[in-house]
Length: 117
Image 1: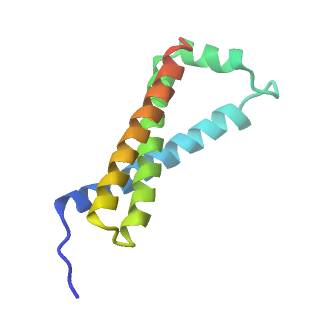
Image 2: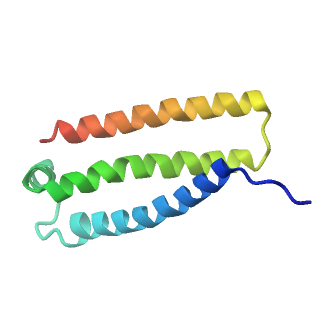
């Protein structure tokens, strides 16, 4: 039984893979820099703050890391829910809830990062 795939489904499928590739890079970089290459032992707030305030690239790194994480997580959960073919009402409610959650999480992450500088 062949089903028509909407452009929206194709776009979210592509963006899920795209964000996953970036997250693999972000996570690898984050773990290496903060956990393996950190020579003093324990990581302190002062170390993280110094790294973020001292480099535009680290700021950009985390400003991209936050929304990619939020999108990838919520889009992945939505893909699981969509496999069960929810009713139209549940689908609309869930998408609206996910948008609200995404905006809140991205805002909190951005607010946290901007208050570090």
